[in-house]
Length: 158
Image (cartoon, rainbow, N blue to C red; front, side, top):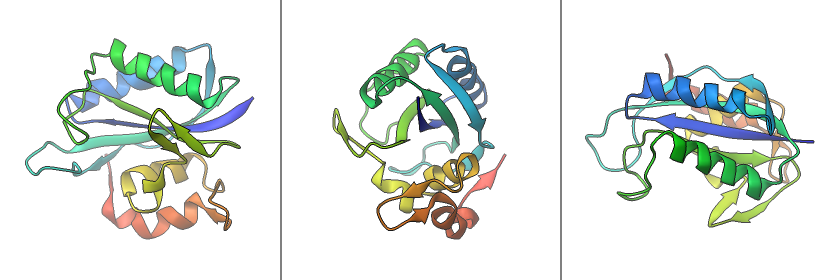
């Protein structure tokens, strides 16, 4: 069994969609949800004028490999009505990304794990640190808590 951190985000009916995504993750027999972060409100990244996002993270344990876990996240997104159109910064019904996977560093279908934006984006770092503060990120022994602490003033708990 391996641990992974999955980030969640939504800016289309986010209260309903975040709750539905958390419920869908909890219902999956392929993984066990070990911890869930608080939900945070953040400004959308990308073109101005988009609604704010709600973001969170879950720590899961699974026997799935990183590729299969990523495919499961895409399946849940699809089941919830996500259509991947409009570019990288388009509004989203739900966004589920494997941002860290224990013992794995690499690229899966164009997505780097660990997510290289964790060090810069509060909506990734803070919720991840809430569920696994002592998880080491990178080869230098930096923990998620150390990354998240200076970013906490950029994010608002709901």
